[in-house]
Length: 248
Image 1: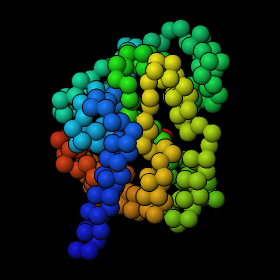
Image 2: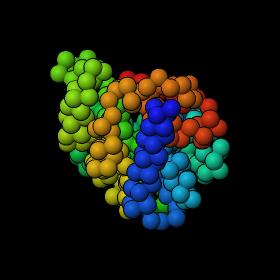
Image 3: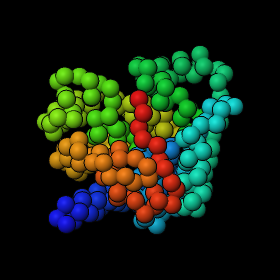
């Protein structure tokens, strides 16, 4: 049908956009990926994999606590033959770590400290020079409580409202601490590549897609959320099973 053909065209377009970004930003044959159990980091890892790059995945778990993310990341890496480094993040020494995050790396918001703290222990172990991440992708989908409950957005009712949220989200000085992550990485001579942030082609792609197109009810790997990306990598996702949806 015309609808199915259009969806296939959208998937090919998004696949090509990601490949062009990775080709430009990561000319090296080897790349590190900050891999969680979510579709966003999996999508950039699979893009590099499709391009024939040697992927090394880095994930983490809190000391003495297994997590869905680290277990799923390990499963994904093993499925596609990637090396995986699972870092145990300590629960001690928090006060000096928090001071370091605030004074040395410019963390200010609660989310900055939450998001960046584990990478004080992950980034020093990365051997590759370029580091791919799915950081910031949630902003394109309007999945947060703020997006769905704030009356000035009403993201499910109009593309204009969803785009207003997107504009406000990516206008923030530091989306989920991405600038702080880059600062920390620079201390280890690492370059972080974030295809979902500050890439005009990604922005143009998503700004033409409303809520229904982004989460259209198609059941792939057990979820309809972020369905464009799930369809784009459907073949690979079927090999690794359910990928949990975003949760606030």
